[in-house]
Image (cartoon, rainbow, N blue to C red; front, top):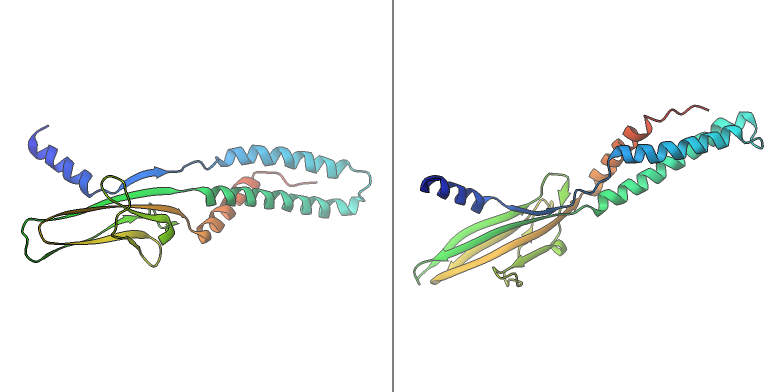
Length: 193
């Protein structure tokens, strides 16, 4: 690799935020289909074959129990989404060569992986190069989409801060995603009695 391409790669890595950890442990929908299809079939057969339930009541009881299965799925899936975390790190430094005046180096942000994620001040750390807490604190955008650090340097020298932000799914996204997942899983189950 020649010097220019090496330098270009270095610059690209320098300006790219680090996605340190993205928890991608959502169970596949097929897992839930198999699980709830099995439970559904047992429940359906129990209602269908229960001689103590009058025939005209079986469809209502079946629907109630089917809705209970869906509510259990929604509860489990919501907890899964709520437990997801993505950690994004962004480094920022400001170097000044002379002792007079102030150099403004602007802000750099650790941004959410996508619009479905957010952070808040309690989930953000500002760190020195050695990993110890930095005296300069990062701020979060009002919508939670990023945690940013603004740096300026007075006098000769260098300052460095790493912003480490933990993101989680927005509650409104979780509701929409769980509803879509619920439809995807339970539309495949034949609901006849």
